[in-house]
Length: 254
Image (cartoon, rainbow, N blue to C red; front, side, top):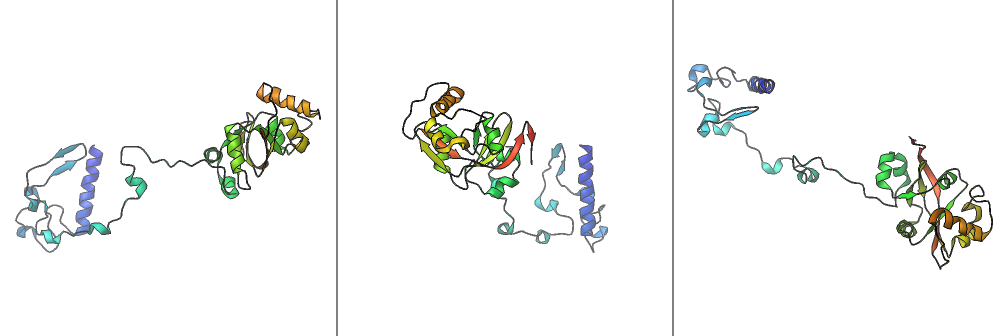
């Protein structure tokens, strides 16, 4: 408290020096102490220090430095004063900092994604969960498309958004990749999807069998844990292209 009061006193002295006012008598320039009706010691002014406020009953004129008149006090045009930005006006003091949240979207410019940090990418992009080794096969280029049931929420959203500017953050327990999802295809079963995309969908290192029934069983047993009857346009296949590897084995990559 004493430190701040000292700063207030120092500021008062600086103002007096800048205005050419005698700090002991409050004499304005060109006026001697003998010409002043009320020396500084007799002025009745409010005392305000850090941690304490005391006000005396005073006349408005007693706030003026002796020798000055109200006309000497400059006036400001309120319209000319700068306005606080809307974000400040909407966030009064004491209510914490204003936080502008990034709206998640599938559509972004590639330059924006290449410059963003991993934490920013997690806010910008929708996450797409993968099991290993599927995402590792996508990263090394062995797998260039991925099949999902269309009745999943993200599958429906990706189907509606797939384009050259559609991106997702693919995540597994080992890595995170930014993927472009340019196109989609609809099939009646996973076996039917494999008949069209072959090893681009299921690399041989992932499932060695080339039989459509084995591929169907591979998806049912490894991902869904139940039989999945064939139905028109029930399975969607997305083309995927790696545009950035953001983390691998817990290490953030730039």
